[in-house]
Image 1 (cartoon, rainbow, N blue to C red):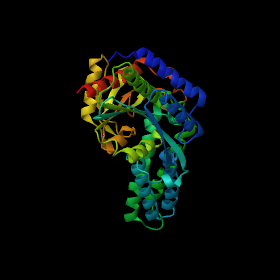
Image 2 (image 1 turned 45 degrees about the vertical axis):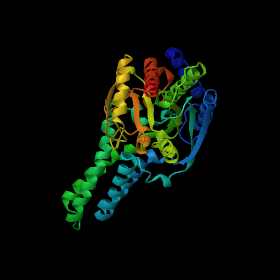
Image 3 (image 1 turned 90 degrees about the vertical axis):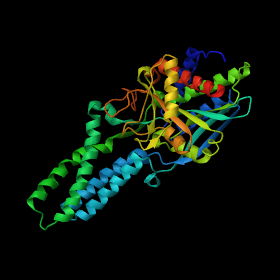
Image 4 (image 1 turned 30 degrees about the horizontal axis):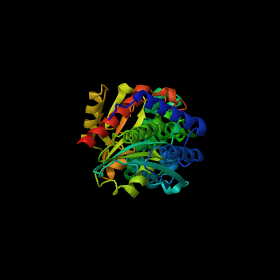
Length: 404
């Protein structure tokens, strides 16, 4: 096959990303602009794919972050309960709040979703066929919905970790306190309990500020993560052009997928693999997901996902990192950091696919890209070399798989 013109592909990916943002702006999951962006992506796929599809699905996008506000309300009610000397009510409420936090955020389960408004999301799917029998499938994916602005990344970002962990920590310690009260309850309230009740009343300031963690406004979502969908389109177009030039893939079917509602807890990828997961297991499928490709020097491949609860393909991650090194790009493999969330690769892995996510930004609780989940997540915040690397590695991975 001909060597890909990465500079031209990168320029096309940036241009497409810029056009979508200029036309539609922020694209919160289930919004009108989100649906319009999905239509534009499908229209682009139709210019080169052998087949395109859209997949509508239902989602409750507010649930993924607004469970935090439920915890704040629970804390206030439980605080009143301990002042009224009914610690059992407080303990049960706080325990319920901790369960919501574990299932909704630590594990990305849909526990409180039905309490929030249901809207429609749209996944977009295009296929480039090989000339021979399909013996393996490769999915290149990104997501086109944009994130809600994280207020804590805008106001006092250096205190982000303290504010989040402090609020959650106060909630957890309050639960332990209510357990102690179950075994020491007396009437009237003893002095020591009045002192501790007063302390946890003061800590309401720390817990209460979590109410304002996320804005209801969306980011432009260029690096997180429209550019990933745009560069996936370029990879698909490259293989179609190679087929037309007489250099086709022989046995590898390439799928280009732009997921919706990733920022609502991976709900789009979950809907996709719930419906098509079995179809994508035979013949074997490999999921090359891209998320936040901002800075080349920070490129890595995830070996676990969703706060470490879902293993990804270490074999595929190491293979992609080796390809990166062969091409002259820096890359490592590592598990996801606890409390940093998850990516769409997790849903593919749970469906039985070989799955990894390429990321290219600092990714831990102490440091993220400066524009991450802020209004500054625009095209000029993305390093061109990071996009070229993501495309080059994907193309070489597919070529090697097909040749094997």
